[in-house]
Length: 221
Ligand code: SF4
Image (cartoon, rainbow, N blue to C red):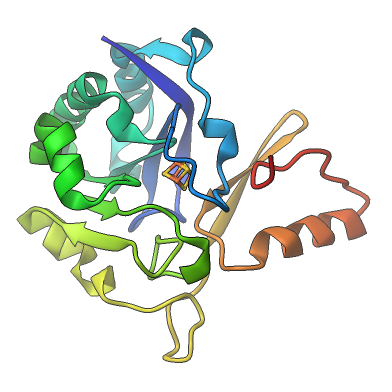
């Protein structure tokens, strides 16, 4: 089974609880204005890998150092059969290693469940809804206030419940700390996590002040 993948990363510490494997699928047609990940919109054979290869990559990481798996995008629901195959493989590993499975989608929960019933049945939690720039600044691991963190299993409730109802990072109620990671590959910098409003421009200015100009950024066409 082929799946289009944007990138894989371990350790991920800014997208989901604990230390995680990160799997970003490639391809999204939702085109949320203000999306920070426009590089994941395009679909094409150059992004295609076998699901087995992704699972082999997971198996090559030290399982004792992994708490769970974060599947994001792009839009994972664009590839329902491949996503189901991936989730079946990850669920087997959840049995062995105690990993939780958390997935991000720009769809609402009911839409995701209808489009991807097999994956939905295997996930411990779902972060739902499109990014809405006018409501930027969501709860932990969410970009805007309309997005929901929905635990789907007992394990999901155990691991995500405490974050499901929180406010924006550093908000008036105290909020959760802002968390971001940077992955540097050759001349590209990947940002992992959900930045606060204004963070991308602040990062760009800070890098420029260090003599590192960003020639192209994924949050602008
Ligand atoms: S925010 Fe997510 S769902 Fe929206 S366009 Fe970007 S990748 Fe797609």
